[in-house]
Length: 127
Image (tube, rainbow, N blue to C red; front, side):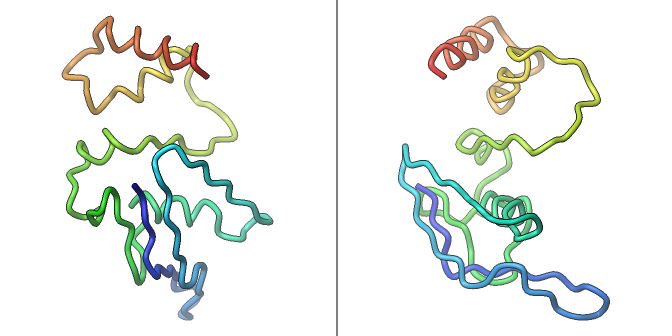
């Protein structure tokens, strides 16, 4: 379902190339769970962001269902992938149900329908 092929990521810091990730290869099938462990600053969030296309790999690529991420529109991709960014503080007051319903965003036109909230409740029950 998600495959990472020979991917690397670097940044330029103070005029020097700083390698963050090198030669990453990974294949995840539907239903598999991946845990990424490491010390602070090791590149865990950078890896996740590269995997889902929020950052561009310096070399290599991420393939979703056999297709490079660049071949998907944002709407198509976010119907398949869910990503909740790490946050230490929240700047808005939101109920859990509303937060889960945000995952329906690629399927919502202008305003969420009752079915979107029903689906969100069902997911919370499952979890």
